[in-house]
Length: 166
Length: 386
Figure (cartoon, each protein chain N blue to C red):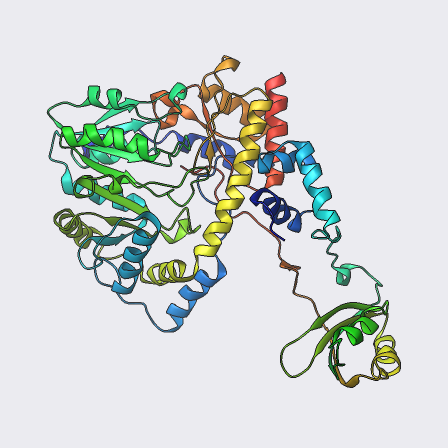
């Protein structure tokens, strides 16, 4: 769908800060607050804006248990529905974070979050690889997140400029 | 004991920059929110930094041609053509300089004879008049005002011209006012400039940061190219201030004159910075676009906010400065800036340091994060209520 420049500008801003106050968003985009509200509502209804979420660095939280794995899945596509049917069967599992159809040597990339490696292993062996269309799986556990969705986790933004300059 | 008579009269007569005092005051304070910074808040893009590192790894550590590496001059030529519709020959009309500041210096020294007058349009960057003096010329300041959005009016220009006038320095978009001269403004000014056979030294360092109207270079106005020395660089648009890299484009005869000064005083610009700039022009334009969008949002925010809290602020078309009036507070711009710093710890630059017509205003750079800008607005609002 074709969006206006003002709508695109709203999306660019809230993509990195969805908590921004409406008043400030209005000032930054040179619009009235009511118009921002209307635009947001429209974008939500069109599911261009799907959700307002937060990026959390769970590795910083003591005693937090959780592992994430990326699983390369080879599947047999079905006549008429291609990969969509098997993708649907996979993404409906609650432990599945994301599913992408890929070009290259495998077909689906599945990101799974579990409490432990065992948890993920159980999911792969009992749920994923037992699906009829699934030919093979390769599981990669994520050891450390450096950057996620464009945000560098460990980076401290420090202003190195001198305080007053011509 | 060192005698002050050792110092040349020209230099002794130069006024120290008024910005220095505020730097000293603010630098020693904790918790200062600074709107006093005249440079981007972005760090140079990684692809550009990485290109400089790679150039070092490859051992590119020697001098370059005086005018700069030819690959970079070719890219500059292509960039100027594509972005601003001006064409300069990379072989003999482009010199890579140590920042736009050095470009202004060699431009003035190449054209000014002792005693000739150079028109300096205020408010303006602090170095123009001193550079004219150091080149042996006489700086003649012309004033602009808020009623005309700090645009130079043709009749004001014409009134300042004397038989001794050699050149005029024009900066658009402007530091400190953010004012951008549109095509019509430039056309009207060009008529007077041509009529009196003046040269133009055009400081277009903020050309990439134009928010409402496409930027027009004065060199594209018919009949102006042959009398224009065009100065641009990488500091503002590409967030590369510390690399010290600019360039100057001019007709061949003027370029050759400038190159003489450049080869005797500077030899060449830093080699690693030149390779970084090459990468900037080849692959950096998307980042420039993103930075421009980001500044535009903050410009919109700060100008509206100033007007809301009672500081009358015109809408600056470019650069990253807002220049609100503080006249209704009854304070001078120096008093306002000093009291604001001491009471609320917000650093701004008093407008009078940019020239007489800057009095009654403060320069606020919005090249800071939105959080910092919001905090600054809150504090300035509180300061005004006292």
